Amino acid sequence: MKNWPTWECEPSTFEWSYKEKETCLIVQGEAKIKTSSNTQTIKSGDLVTFPKGFNCIWEISKTIKKHYRVGE
Image (cartoon, rainbow, N blue to C red):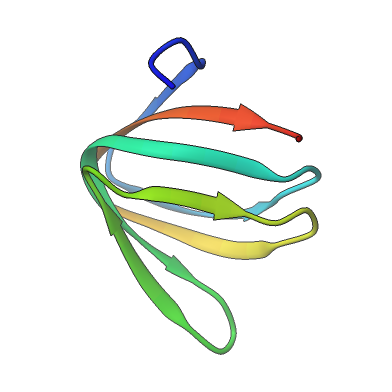
């Protein structure tokens, strides 16, 4: 996982749609992932999978850094 690409983002809020499945390891920070029916908090140490077609709002409260893999 440490060889996967890295993505970082400062506190912000934005909509996101996953065109492919994405698996990510959160290595720093915290965010709320909101859908029309649920809110989930992700933070450092979490391993998260977003399915293809998943639509959500990212609400980043602490600068987040993740390693991620798209597809598969």
